[in-house]
Length: 331
Image: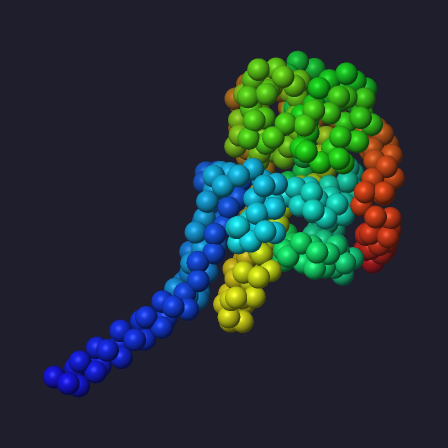
């Protein structure tokens, strides 16, 4: 009897010790649970829990339950939230140079963008995020797609077609400068309010990747989708530096490994589904797809944007990234 009591006490003690070392991380993001990203974030949390044998639990709060995208990012800085998944444009609210990947017509293709964002060309920018704002990227890469413009009653084929239109833009200066360069009126609207703004005709159009246009049903209240492919949207998964430091080294390894796995799966799924989503939009009859866009003309107009943004982004950052892109293309 004494041996059984001692054994039970030992088991209970081990359980309590394990529970004492268990950690819960709060992960707030802007995506809905029906989106690819929302599904993968939930799976990521589950796999981290299993990979750490229950030592790390990630509680996921989707669909802006804890705040808007930029608010969530700033909550990570303050430690009020452990993890989030902002776009690089949203992250530029703290480190302006994180907006560089969103420069219009910057990238030749996704492979080029992914290689450069992962490279040492971006290290000083991410170092600033860590050292000044207490935020560490768990994954620098979270493919979201090429952004395209939608409009209510005017098809966009050349920059002049944007003239005078009120185009919803994120609350990020590079979008404002780009729409101005095309002759439009940039109108910042929070992401969660875009559908209503389009429906009520507060704005004439907006721009987003096809997965967003499809999943958020923007095409239902717009007449045209112009395949401008003017910007690449890349998001990240980030964590509060102090929250990361509290994890055991082996648990950090699991966290980063599972983030890398989720990122790769996201890229595969998003790229695979873009074509089918576009076809579904076409079949809906709600929006006409404009394929014959003069992208060269749009790109020519957009050249002034990167120059105009040098003061905000930091000229050394811009020059280093452009040099890395040039070197990549010469290989």
